[in-house]
Length: 246
Length: 89
Ligand SMILES: Nc1nc2c(ncn2[C@@H]2O[C@H](COP(=O)(O)OP(=O)(O)O)[C@@H](O)[C@H]2O)c(=O)[nH]1
Ligand SMILES: [Mg+2]
Image 1 (tube, rainbow over the protein chains, first blue to last red):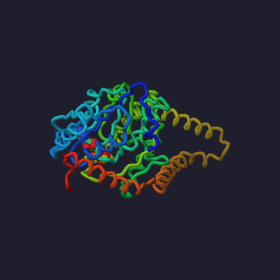
Image 2: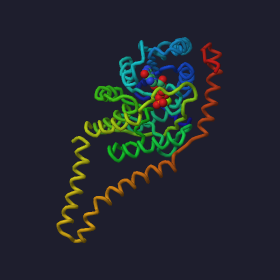
Image 3: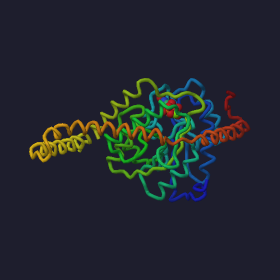
Image 4: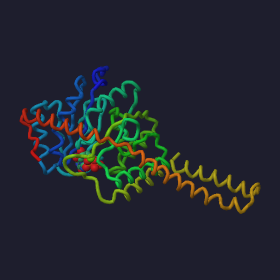
C-alpha cells in the first residue's frame, strides 16, 4: 500500500488495537498476521478481549503470543460472555497507546485499511477516524437484499432524525484518541449496534473532530454473527433514546 | 439542547407558518388545510426515495472477497510454518 510507506512514527505515537472476540478461533490468527503485515513501521499492540470462548480462541492467542511476543499481543480475557460495550471498556483499561483502534476479529474489518486511518488522523489531527462503507471507495460484500434494505432504511431514518454528520453510523471500525474514547465510553450506555451509533452521535454532539475513510466490508467467512434476534426493535428504541438524550 | 427539542422547534415553526397562511388566506383555505397532509406524504416519499436510491446504488465489492481469500491462504501458510493452529475447515 502506498499509504504504508509514507507513515511516519510521529512523536512516538502508539496505537492500541482492541479486538473483542467470542468464538473467533479461525479468524484471530489471520487477523493478527494481517495487522503485522500492514503496520510495519508503527508502534502498536493488539489487545484481545476474549469472553471465555468455548472454541479455544484463547489457545490460538497464546500460540500467537509465542510467535509475535507477549508485549505485542495482549490477552485480556474475561470469564464469560459479557457483551461488546464492556469488552471495549475492559480492553481500554489495559491500553498503553495514546491512540486506540477498535475492530472486529471476523476479518470484516480488514487490517489493510489501518494505514489509511492513521494517515488520515495525522493529516487532520482528528479525534476520531471512522471507517465508512457508504462513500466512494467503500462497499459491502455478502449481504442479501433484505440485509441491504434494513441497512439503508436504518441509515435514512437515523440521518433524518439525528443529523449526525457522519455517513456510516453503525460501522465499528474506528480510530480514537485514547482520552476521547475514555470520555465516550463513560457516557454511553447502549448495547449492540446502537452502542456504535451512540458513540459516534455523542462524539459529534460533544464537538470532537470526526473524519472518515472508506472501507470495504466483506461479510465474515468463518464463524457466525453474535448479534441477532430483535435487532430492528432494539435499533428503533436506540434511536428514540438518542433523540431525547443527545 | 437535546436533539428532540431541535426537531420540535422545527415542527412548531412549520406549524406557525401554516397557521399564518390559514389566517391570511392568500391561497384558498381548502388548499391550506391540506398542506400538513402534503407535508407528511412528501416526507414519506422522501424516505422511500432515499432508501430506493440507496439500494440501487448500494456499493458492493465482490473483488474484495477474492482478495480476502488470497490474504487468508497467505496467512495460513505463514501461520502453519510457525506452528499456530489455524484449523482445517
Ligand atoms: N468479548 C466479546 N466479543 C464479542 C461479543 N459479541 C461479539 N463479539 C465480537 O465482536 C465482533 C463483532 O461481532 P459479530 O458477531 O461479527 O457482529 P456483526 O459483525 O455485527 O455480525 C467479533 O469480533 C466478535 O467475536 C461478546 O459478548 N464479548
Ligand atoms: Mg461481523
